[in-house]
Amino acid sequence: MSELKETLKAQIIEQLNLEDLTPADIQDDMPLFGEGLGLDSIDALEFIVLLEQFYGIKLADPSEGKAVFSSVNSLAEFIEKNKK
Amino acid sequence: MYFIHKASSINCQKAYQHDNIFRDLITPEDYLMLEEVDYKSLIPPAALRRMSTILKNSLCAAHQLKTEQDFDAIIVGTGLGCLQDTEKFLKTIHISQTETLSPTAFIQSTHNTIAGQISLALNNHGYNMTHTQHTFSFEVALMDAMQAVDDGMNQVLLGAAEEYIPFLDRLSDVVIPHDYPLSQGVSFFNISKTPAQIGITSIQFFNFKNPEEIRKVIHDTHADLLIYNGAKDESIHVKNQVNISQFTGFYLSNSAFAMHVGYDYLKNNPLANKVIIWNNLSQNHQSILVIERK
Image 1 (cartoon, helix red, strand yellow):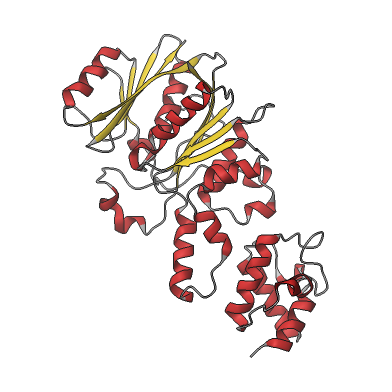
Image 2 (cartoon, each protein chain N blue to C red):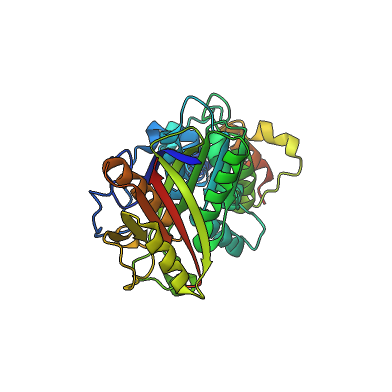
């Protein structure tokens, strides 16, 4: 799981062009939206693409997004549960 | 009458926040090397991370022209638009077979991106429009700006922006034959009906079926300086002539930088009264813009 989290952090930095950050700057439980990393609604769309592109997971219910994308921890748990 | 209150450019010359651009024009060693601008001091990091070169530079130039009063209109001309994002988006389509497309590249590659992004960044709710008309993109945007002023909009941000990507080299001669290397740049102006030192007198468009007509207009204008961007015409006898492409390289809207240089020339030479900007990049469709001291 910790390896997945580190991979996720690198992918988030790459996909969302967070070029001033390193994986070490993103804590596992840090809120990704709002006051944490400060991501926005376009980033949420990028997360949907990221899940599909790298893990083959389609977010079937968009209302799940808020909880799934809330932190690296929640993203990793969702991927572990749903990856094919 | 349409007055130019301020101008701002970013390209391979020293033009950004710089006075006396005309005096300091140099033939650059690298036409793609843009003047360095501190983006982070003007654009929030969250927005900056998504912006390509053309958007960052356009927004910095727009910031420089901001006044206490909001712009009533934001009007931009671009020949080829946001090429970095367009290329990224098309590559993603090709690789993913349209399955998983990144929204950012799509959003930023659309036609009205430049004026739209400036509007969003400045929290401006006025009219915004990006015009694309090949070598006339800046001139068409200028006409829209003049119309906006006629319609009562008193603070108009007018600009032109172009971005280089290496793929353009492969299309180079298809875009248009040119004598100088492909390059990039942005130029923006604050246009208003409120009187200022220098104004835009006229713009005329020509089909190049009769070059004599263009020569006659140029000679009859009695300008102190002629700035053109295409081939030199040896039969035109204006004492001071500058080919702006020699200093900017080739990009489709470099006539906007020519207007900035002309504006700067009039500002810094009190004895000069008129400058012609002759957009002759295309052999078939050309324009003559006159700016003068008021």
